[in-house]
Length: 188
Image (tube, one colour):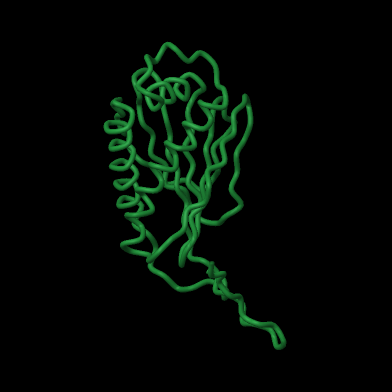
């Protein structure tokens, strides 16, 4: 740890993986009406390799900061979107479009928002960024943060979805320099 970071007990990867499993299974069962079967979690240092499909990234910030990632194939993204949007039959969506990307952003927000709630019990209040969604073939998504990823794969019928989370203690804020006023919150 560098001198700029707070000292904090490391997160228990098994507990983080358990929260990812619970959050994902809840979103799948209550919001999508689908089953998801979690696989064994792993702790990895590297970003995923080349991806074909859809990836949604979301940032978390507080006394700890990090990135959450949900990735799946284009066909699974279409299926998830169909189930999220008025329970359409899974065969109705054939191609990734704006609605599919928006749906995966919302699903990511729900899953990682629930994981954030679990983390807040240990780490204090946290903020969640707006999801960024990427779709394509043979691309790599990378977060510049430090630390290890907790990775939980899910089987969804014949397809797979993966949820990743990496958290690290936030750097301590730099002291104010002489002559600069502290930031103020806007009041409306």
